[in-house]
Length: 72
Image (cartoon, rainbow, N blue to C red; front, side, top):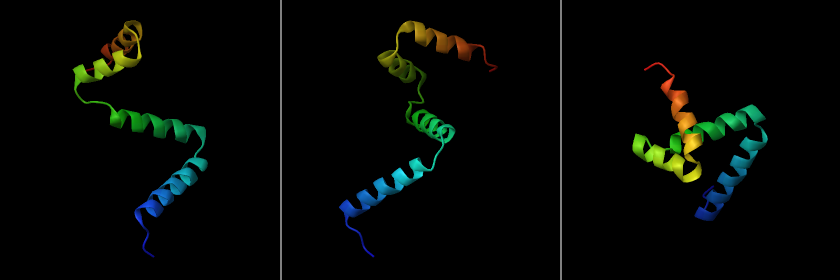
């Protein structure tokens, strides 16, 4: 069988929906978290700027404090 571009897109969407339908809440949260982490910038300054785009300085400072308590 040879699918055209539109059919391939539709097949991907149907497959994705089947995958999601078969995930429990923990699976969905893990998948979303992993996807977000992979899409974030690696550069520290770019990451901080992205966080500032969506959250205020108080939230950013809480995040920075949390990671500063981790072992290096």
